[in-house]
Image 1 (tube, rainbow, N blue to C red):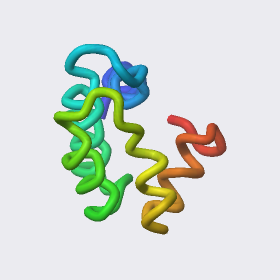
Image 2: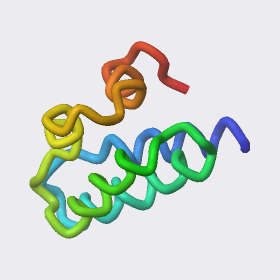
Image 3: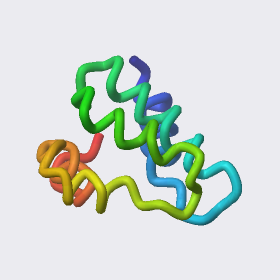
Amino acid sequence: MDDDETAEQWALVNTPLGEEWSGRTRYAAAMFFYKRGEMSAETLEVYRTCSRLDAEDPLSIIRDHGVGKDWLARMAGKTRP
């Protein structure tokens, strides 16, 4: 995959909470990372569940469920693309 595409998807998965359609935007970008093998199915499922809830923070749910530790580390800036 192209670095520009990865950077764009990274920005989309980090769309601020509460913006209209932001949940769906984050989910679509999460699917990009899942298809590349960079996100677990359990983590993607949280994004899917939150896709219609623009103000819901998928990262807090991921943390609460104890899944996606690699993804949480990446989102914390430890292993960004």
